[in-house]
Amino acid sequence: MYWFGQAAFYAPADPEGFFINRKIARYLHEDTDDRHMRRGYYVGACNSRGVHNFDPTGKAEFDIADSFRDKARLADEAGLFKFAETLRDIEAYFRSIGEMNIEAYRTS
Image (cartoon, rainbow, N blue to C red):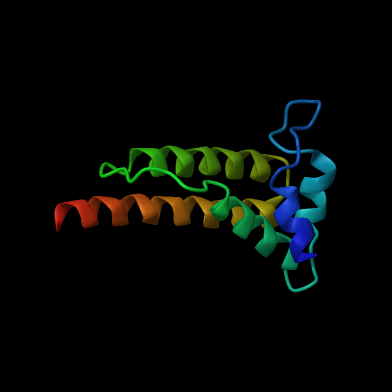
């Protein structure tokens, strides 16, 4: 289930315009097996950035965080509140990375 969650991060958008296929979003939302699928999705999202340049302004990370905040709002509106919580956790991760970059640059 964990590996499914990681792969689900790369699922295509729903044909009706939702940011992820709705069936996969429901699987992630309904994950009751100790949240393994949603944890995998979280790790997949956090690792998806890959290698990138250091941004002393944190802007790149804040932009990513904002996109996950927007996705969480959409998931909430679709009634997928458990999945939305995971998306907010991802938002918080990227926001914290941006803040760490600013602090690291400030103290260097």
